[in-house]
Image 1 (tube, rainbow, N blue to C red):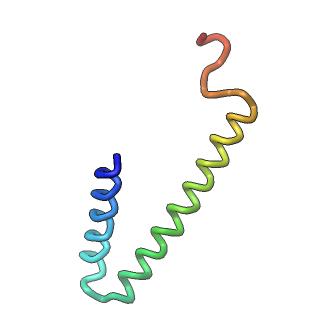
Image 2 (cartoon, one colour):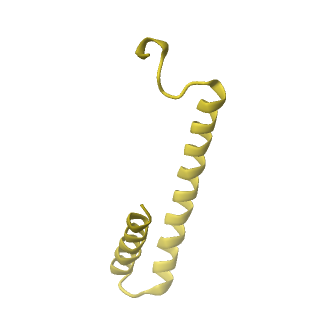
Length: 65
């Protein structure tokens, strides 16, 4: 799992460098936006899964058991 994470991060940074064509101010703006999007998505997913645990539903209904 850590190798997949490291590979994904390197791939994203590489694509950002290719898109920005070595204009580093553009590179850091793109990277900053990607980090903000990742934090928002992570926060929403954390809230959704924590609310499911509090309600006692883990994705399976009574009919499926």
